[in-house]
Length: 67
Image (cartoon, rainbow, N blue to C red; front, side, top):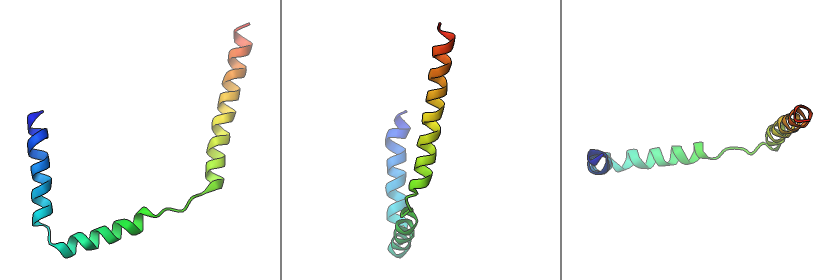
């Protein structure tokens, strides 16, 4: 565990120091473009509806078999 606490952060710092600044800037700009994702309200509604349907079916199943 000690190596994870000491060696991993030192390795990250070393890699950042040895990477040219133009490569870091290009990577950051590319990551910023990829990080912007569209929001799909239809997909969210489908997921929420599926969860509600499953919860309702489970509740019905519990209600019927608990009697």
